[in-house]
Length: 297
Image 1 (spheres, helix red, strand yellow):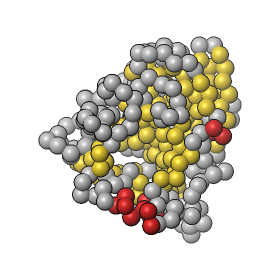
Image 2: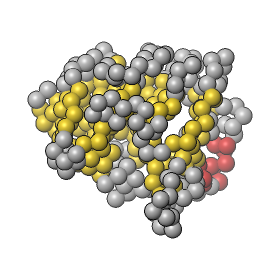
Image 3: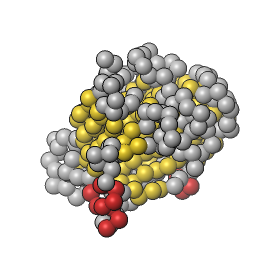
């Protein structure tokens, strides 16, 4: 069976902390075809490059500010102190364009990718223009930054967003799937890239181990069984199956970057809930959004 969980440094490739599923990734994953992710940590004045390829890309600062050169045109991305301080500027590059990403002061940056054929223009999406959604309620409350979803960004194949879950809450819940092309569902692979932090105001010791959990299990005869501890820098691939919850352990906030794409005819996120757990959505009507949301600077 293919490996679906990559802990920090297990998907390292040269200057890249994570390099999975992209056109230039040295690490190949059996059965993985539609999405990719690269993450780099740059020292002050450092840079990384991506060659021109038939894949669309979106550059997401995780912390720090960045300059992105796209075929010789410079774009400035105002970043953030961390993924837990609200949205950042992001840059969609389109396809068949070389990228050079640099940072004067250093920082960490992610690039979501998907093989694509149709060309869309390069677009800077500012933090102020990113739709921020507060999804769920009660202990299922979470914050979603929809900068790369169909309603927010013109693109060919991928759907990209990021989610922040306050300490003790569950997200990606109820468990759901998108592994069939059928009425009301689209077939999409999905990447989860995680970061964690000690929740603000916690009396945690300096050596506290900020941790979360991710669950994936079979929806049909295809075997998959993931119940993984996740920390900053870890990545979980979801090729198919029910997935959720993504759990923020008490005392620790949880962030993940989602990258989804598939071979279907439409770019749309249509899901089916696990019928054993879908009823939970009804309980949100009588619950309030967690008052710790939204996370912001």
